[in-house]
Image (cartoon, rainbow, N blue to C red; front, side, top):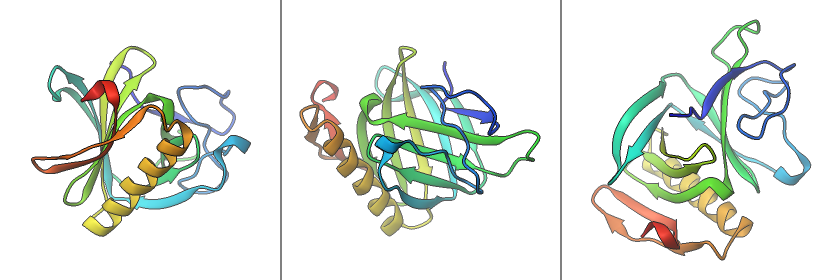
Length: 170
């Protein structure tokens, strides 16, 4: 299973799969196409591989506080809880990889079709429903602006309220 997160240094080469860490804590190097980012504080995050009907096959936790960076073309997470020699833990989801955005009690779940042919779920906990809802709505808004023809409005199922999903994911 590919991982959404990698330890990267500022001198690492640019990659479509992982962002380059920024110059300040919990940041990434922004491209012109990113536009003006919206930032949210994330308490923790996890990535799971999905098989069939949203069953976890593997999980990787990011148990420390990090920053969610929502831009016009991607949603990124950056965590500076590592030494400068180790690098910064960073990862991103390009809006073209998104399959759905859902919000729960205090969390946001992104379902992802990763370019390495894997289905993944990124769950981020914010500590309050208000912050989780604001982050989910911002991600959904930016993803729809990026590619409005792909997304349709979702529904409430169980503990997750789906804001948007791709037509094929229904």
